[in-house]
Length: 148
Image (cartoon, rainbow, N blue to C red; front, top):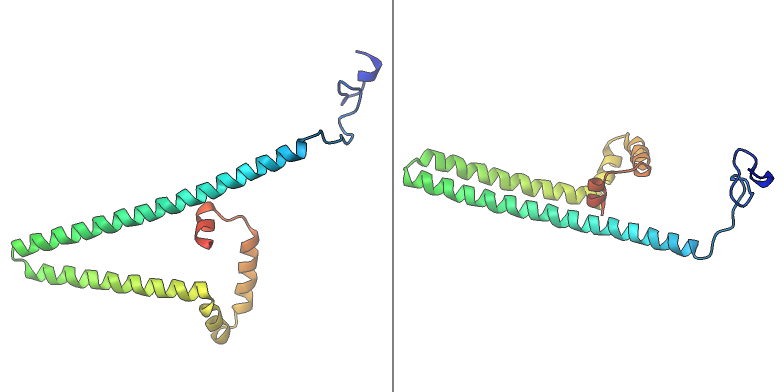
């Protein structure tokens, strides 16, 4: 070893590793390019996750509808009218629950439920504080998808 390479953190140029290095030409541009590629990949992942979820919902809806029609045809063919009434009531109930869920989600997302909470419950300020703390934590990709 030569004198300029002595020390525990010496480099080939004789500088210690703890010293600030000047950025090399093009280093910032390379970092910006990498950051843009990562952001683009995240956006693409969100896009395909959304497409995938909608696809699953559509496939399940079609399968559910086909199964209902098959059950109704079978029950009509076998003259089991008491079960036909039960299936009809079941699907009416599911439709109502879906509508109620849609309305409630719309009320929550629009902020109406926060106003109701402030009017009738004293915990509104505490809830708002906890929600703001949760916003600063790192949500999962699925949570981020439904936030937008």
